[in-house]
Image (cartoon, rainbow, N blue to C red):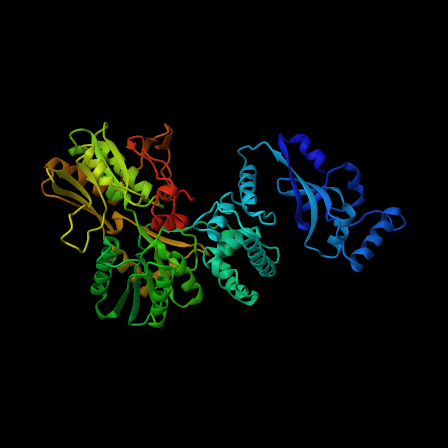
Amino acid sequence: MLEQIIQHSAIASQQSLGLVEIPLELIVGTYYAGRQPAFTHGFLPLMSEKTEFAEKWSALCDAHLSSGIRDPITAYEFMNKFYVVEGHKRVSVLRHFGAVSVYGTVTRILPVPDNTEESRIYTKFLHFYALTGINYLWFSRESGFDELLALVHPSDTEAVWDAQERRDFRAFYTTFRREFEDRSAGKLTLTVGDAMLIYCNIYDYSVSKNKTAATLRTELASLWDEICNRDMDTSIHLVLKPTDRRPLFPVLSSSHLRIAFIHAGTAQTSSWVYAHELGRHDLESAFGGQVETICLDGADTDAAAQKALTAAVCDMSDLIFTTSPRLLQPSVQTALANPKITVLNCSLNTAHPSIRTYYARMYEGKFLMGAIAGSLTTDDRIGYIADYPIYGITANINAFALGAKLVNPRAQVYLEWSKTIHSDYRSRLSNAGISYIADQDMISADTSLPHYVGLYHAHDNNLSNLALSLCRWGQLYERIVRSYLNGSWNSDRIGTHAINYWWGMDSGVIDLICSRSLPEGTLRLIDLLKQSIRAGAFHPFSGQIRTQSGKVMDYQSRAITPQELITMDWLADNVVGGLPAFDQLLPEAQALIRTQGICKP
């Protein structure tokens, strides 16, 4: 009874919605107490068969069967649940005959927002409803509505849906819901909307909205482990060190392994791809003729990525490494369609049990570079250039700032972003007179370009490279492939957890190269810190760390967790600058942020 519910709620206002199609499953009660004794919770009649109520109910049944119930009901909506004012028997009869919805004149009662999760979700729903007019969809997370808007309208999430878009979505949702509920049989806690988001983040909505029920049924079956994994809220299993132990009963593997590497760019145009190509060649050298690799590059669009992955499958590849988070979605699609092929994607914090992911703990090298910069700066100012605000990047920035602060308490790190619109980041640092700068980590194949890599000193139109945090991808690929061949790979699996390899200095994946021109004392300090990090005796994020907002992060009484490092969304107090807003980013960065961003749009 809504009259009773709102007595205990702070009400902000009421809003007339006019004539609305109300999903019958969302009609949960009545407004007035007088109707409570007449119906069950499911709106079935409770009154005796010999009452006037029963006669009217039966007559309404006959009318529905002969001509249909057409008169709208009157109802209130509160927190996207509906309470009947007038038309209880119409709702009851329609429920009895399995109808989906009824039209009603609706007044919305708006509660005063608070900081509860339920209130935050409802606030997101109100914005979603204003754009779409859809009330039959619900998510268990407040980000769900924004994610759906981005899937349907990636170029303009604030666009109002037209009638055709609403019809298309209703048809897709109805088919998806039927297939999902048939398969789940009420055993999952996820809403239909939650499951639909998982599906649409793997299979594009723009294509899927026209698929048949049979196709949706097949694809749902293939990704059911993904849905169940999310339903159980199974955490990602982070493998922080290579598994050195051999299994008791080794798996007999083939003597020859075919491995495909798929890149979003090319080695000539991307230093990131060039670094992974060096790793691929190191992998081949480590195994001699036992491992054969192919390189498929330029997969910078969905169509090109799918073409490259299809080519890798047709080439009878045993393993496929996709070296960019941009290739995550097609990687999962390929793994689901080809369960006998092992697919690994270079990304972090990815909860897909159908693939494995890998990355490097780059913040360890950044911390050491920060310590070098802090010891060398003469005016306490250091520049730092980042690219994408994705998982792991904030830890890199903060680690650098903490390293600088360790040796120079007055050190300030001036943060710039290279993937923002109209970004003239190097000029801004130069005009500010900042000469010690930490730039990109990867060296380029084009030796004619200036070496804006690692930590350098810009002075008198010259660059002096001082240190480079090096990611040895070949080490990572070799250890993964070796574990695959000897069977220890299987010991990393824990139930349906998604597996992410996140290796650092203790695995030989991260290292630091220093210029011989650095002072002897600085080199000794860096070597000591490096050995301590490698041995696990020291962690860059230890002690009490103050953020830009003044909050103290206490990692003295407890150790920081890997998940906190990956999803870190704050900056240390000696960082000058902030995280860029979504609309400030270049299109290529926006696409990446939607799946890997610290803060989703």
